[in-house]
Image (cartoon, rainbow, N blue to C red; front, side, top):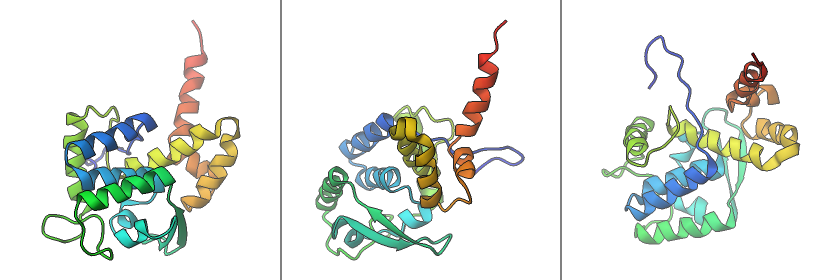
Length: 195
């Protein structure tokens, strides 16, 4: 939760740092958190949609569809082959008995909350030395977006158009601002000046 009268926005993670975090969380026995970070980075979903994912959605086939809670729009998600293997590994490690069960349960058997995960993320940020200033559940969605833009290289504008549609933004300009690209470009103007 942001502080009163302060402008706070979540920051993305560098892709390698995000993948390293997923592996380290898994190794340290924080399997559900590891999977949550992975799903956020690979699917680009809001937490409200991530928290409702079931094992059946993730393990049956190479894609699944959801209706986004915020927009009500249908979204088709393809599951990366390598990440699908990781999902299976988590499923086995957690000894899940019911494939229709949500993936992200708290210790009482209920679906985890955004507030609970963000409290965990504050501890994770310190323990795993996360470089993002504001690390929250929304950082995962931004990490997905930044990775798509970074991989596009010279075709970044086309990637922004695609992301704008995936994120259900009004325009690529909104997506650019959302990912922090606009602020970086404006900051570069000041850096280009010499004295």
